[in-house]
Image (cartoon, rainbow, N blue to C red; front, side, top):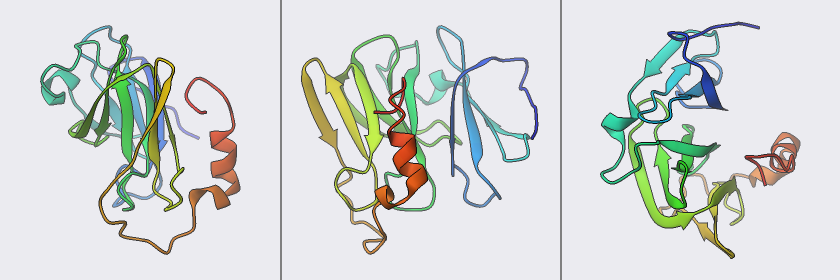
Amino acid sequence: IWESHFKNREPQNAAIGEFDPDRAGLEVWCRSRYDKHQKPFVFDARGRKIADYALKKVRPKGWTEAGIEVISPIDWTGEKKQLIAAKERHKSGHVGLLDPMTGKFVKRIKTKADRLYVADVSGDWREEIIVQSGSQLRICFNTERNPNPGRDRLWVDNAYQRSKMTWNYYSP
């Protein structure tokens, strides 16, 4: 067990995932508590800071200065590296898929998301984004070819099932 910090920034939200497949273990992505201009940072499995950036320098044009919220690691591409799914903070806004190591937005989904969830609903073991917008649910999925079509669904893993059934702030 380790303890670490980065410039005494409070990590208001965190996500744990395989964000850098070339490193042993999982990484911990942290979002600073700042009301505007968030500055995320990433620790490796040993507690060493391995990345940090200013969200204002990487966010898409028109994205709120308040940053991102409702953050979840996502197996979107079918590759080993996970991304982060998040929505615009403090508003019914767009959804973004980010590279946690650089903050680069790899996809922007124009919607009015009140909430978002991440789960494997299509059955190809990649995860989809479930967006609640008012009284509607929308499912956004990756239309690219799945690089591992024979892999079992994520739901066969008991740990995955439990993580999606916690019914907390971030999990459906």
